[in-house]
Image (cartoon, rainbow, N blue to C red; front, top):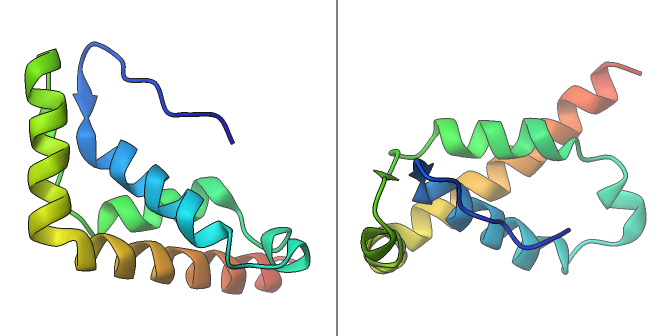
Length: 94
């Protein structure tokens, strides 16, 4: 995966969820990663978390840092659940 790049209007939560996925993916074997629909997993995780929209560069890092401190557990849990839900849906569509 490539590093997430920020558009002009951005939801900083997307970058945080992406970072968490990268961390958690390191724990999975390649066979498990093939069972995950990344787009579905990220969408599920984002729907469990509050949006953090910003249009200013200086707010981007501030929003991300605040969220890391305040809701990092929620981000981790949303990503874990997104991965599991994606695997279940993918298996069900075979």
